[in-house]
Image (cartoon, rainbow, N blue to C red; front, side, top):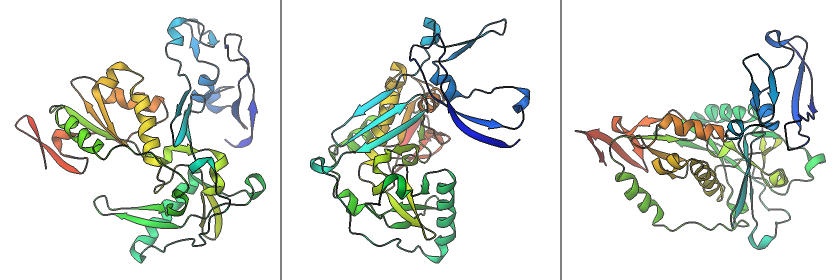
Length: 325
């Protein structure tokens, strides 16, 4: 099967009260699996759902209360230092930080492209950057579209010894000076720890996969997130490791999703991208499915009683209770 082209179509189902919607399409040279059309979840959400009757009659649009109940509405979170929005049509979060005093800097001074990683980390570091490019987290910078770059962010590698993983990070220090963040009290972590230790033994731990990279950055800010990879200028289209606003964006977005369902809200507690799930209140699978429904994918969860690391502490189940070290 070969791609013959891409485009945008604007279906307007009679039952869809949004009016005209836009859906991305891919045209191929043969019927996929014998079908004239395959409609993905992004398309289904764009036309407000699809129902199929027992007689194989297809109806577009949420025209009954039962169907309306499963539709996802857009989310907009307005914070003092950033905004974050969720678009159900694309199932994606997009964030935009706010400049200190509302003033964006013209051009930042840094000219350093990279702090070279060690020889032992170089291969893994470059493989990870290749993955970022493959996933369109890093894309070639288009100066015709976005204008001259306003900032060059130095790349560097962080070796996570406990996981045996090399992670590319960016030196956002100069950019961070122009983004005023309003952080929570230093007592928040202590409060979270106290709350988590009261949850009992039937708890699981899950966290987001590539947490920051699941959140897109508003395209207007791409000129401030440029890097040089293999001699070519790219821009980071997602939140970056090292951005001072990234942790709070992820926590706020994740908390807003967990609050959509009262039972999930009652049975979970979140800190940055870590989520503790009380299995006596809600099943961890239900929590993971809810997050995925709102565009946030999780790593495989861990049963804390079988041994896990929670807020930097090792936790293990012994004689029906949890021991925190």
